[in-house]
Length: 375
Image 1 (cartoon, rainbow, N blue to C red):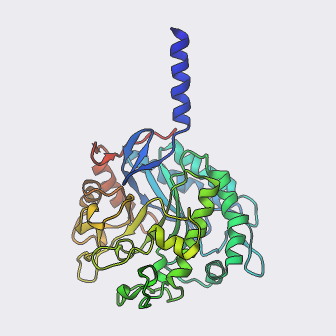
Image 2 (cartoon, rainbow, N blue to C red):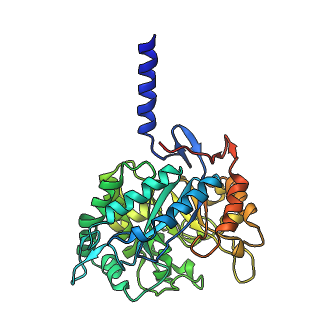
Image 3 (tube, rainbow, N blue to C red):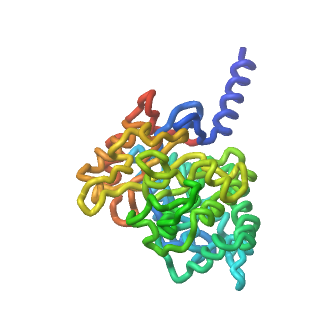
């Protein structure tokens, strides 16, 4: 009898050790239970200078304090920006090719330390690799990766794959966000017979605010190749892109889903280079109201998607007249797979913690649990 009990205990322990955040249909699961991703964006302590080159030592205490605050509020996830535009990582040579993750050789250990701390506080981390919302004076590094496939391959081979290999077994790694708001550098008003590459629906939408630099083909290839590389190293990895608006990740409401599987594969040619879940950001307009593409005026089903959809950025200040409790509550109760408020960096932590506390006890079979114990 004792042998049977011991065997069951060992099996149960192994199951817990092997648990990964996963996807079933249009929702997340962990350890066999449906999960709602309740959390925030940090998104950085020192913009583009938190990881690698020994930099994490200077911000470690701040990150761990944020993880503790999130745990106290009952949250389970966080979005953290990593390379941004290549200011301090990865390591570029003089020709714009990537030769490593960082010049100082601490990048992997920095990320492991951060993920270990997140696990202690039961927080899933979603690293955001790149940023398309701002065109900095170091943008030429990122620009080379988007335009030049040789340079992109150098990043994939010398930085991305080694990073995924080193971190894939870290329990707190929730998934990979390839880029924040690439539409900031997308060319609107492009005409194509293929909806994947037609951006006329973005006329006067604000797309291209950081420079009308890239066609959909260029950006989608950039994502397709990175997603394929991540999944090659870690087939269970979850991958997304932080879209600025619902205008680009639904075929409903008169828009085009640029990030659906067929578009990504068509642009890059990699069959496995697709997204695991969608992510949309939502702020109200100048009139104080959400647009027709906002998740805060629809149920999830209205988007016609067959993968989970996380509301990856929102805040009370631009919340269409809704307070932070109502925003988190709406995300949970209208079929979305998660909600991450914006942002600790911008001084909104106290407000977001109120919203997170508001939903921390939510546990509904139809929408999932917020409480997670990461093993």
